[in-house]
Length: 325
Image 1 (cartoon, helix red, strand yellow):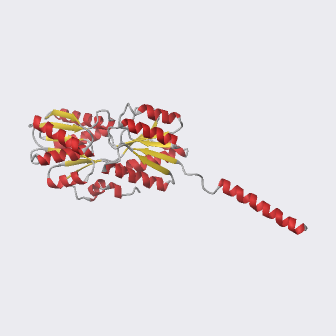
Image 2 (image 1 turned 90 degrees about the vertical axis):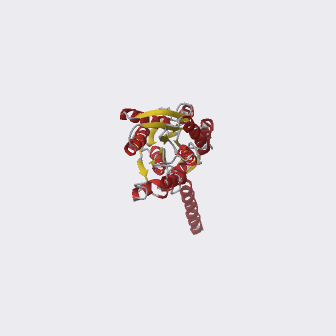
Image 3 (image 1 turned 90 degrees about the horizontal axis):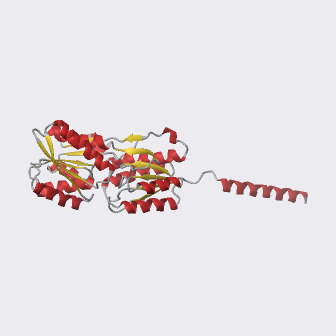
């Protein structure tokens, strides 16, 4: 009898220990991070997502990725931010379509306790802990200098930009324009803002070239506008006349480099933006935010026909296949 009581006590003790272990667990719940992009439709953003997913796997995070269908739809972006907060996101990795009109949604997310990391295109909010992306003013300078270094004589420049409210596009334009004007041999003949869609960019670029046939240098400031501008140049038979500098890596523009409709590309590092954005979110959620820099400049380089097949250029063009060391 005494022995059976002893056994019962041991069983009860074991059950208490088992319940305690199962309630505390050996691993804590995964932190929840939401990435709200400007779009989900381009190779640039697919590369961002690949980097983000790699970091989420490495740091054992629960990651959700959303974005509107077009890079002009800031209202849908704002709803996606609100939805992410309501669904329990603890940190937000965000690329703003509209520097000003996305700010309130970000401020409200931060007021709910959500940590904010900006990538690619920043937002007018003091809640942003760190910005990770291209130095866009310097990238614009780089684009202009690529033309100045490769084309002799006076230049008649046409600029194909996207949404006028996008901070990164405007910074690129400012860097390019100031570099051209400082050279003393370039005139900004025309500037257009078009939808960040290849079809719209092609139509609007063709119209600009028809109105200003003297243009001999074109700059396009993101992936869709570059694809559209390249198509316009090719279809108008102007590949030999116009020197086109585009942005980012796309099958169409890389083909254009080889065929002549594109002369140089300013290639960013979207994989790093995604990876470092999610990694920064993890640090903010685990008390390591003090180690973060306010701004992290991801690498940017010029790829042209001369260096297209070098190892460095191939890594830049196809960065989504690379993993950070």
